[in-house]
Length: 198
Image (cartoon, rainbow, N blue to C red; front, side):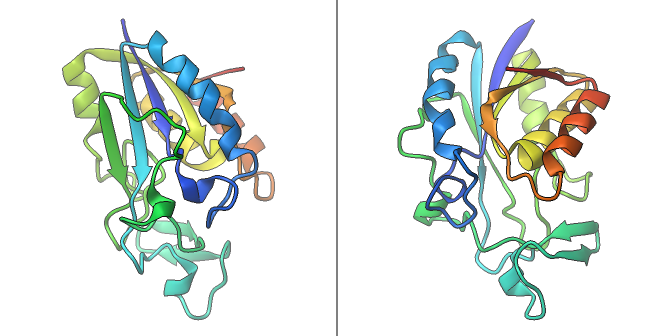
């Protein structure tokens, strides 16, 4: 069984001082770096939005950050502008090792957000990650990164649904935790067959 580490969105805008900072987001960098050598492959994901992305509250004059709106593909949280292509905020945390096997960029289609490393938020448009993993013969995934209750959660559930053996190392993740979103995400991951480890 070939085992890959999937490092989700450890980017400047999700770390303290960033546009959508996750509390303690920088604290997971050293533990993730230390884990990398134990896996057959290391894959990093990068939120990569064009300016004016439809998931930005600034694209909706009557809305504020963290309000909900309805998109053609379903409900969508409206975020502060973050991880805009080519900006420092979209870059990986400077201390994160980025010498992995693959970087998957997601959220680059202006009309649709992408939490999962596997699918856009329409739950249908693939990122290409599954094809890569299948080609490499990878069947087991360990997930770490930001944020536990959004991109890690969606990626883990999709990976499990696609038939991968999935573990989330919670000590190497941090959560936004909006109105109980962390507990809900943990329940959803466990219901999908994801192993939650520390």
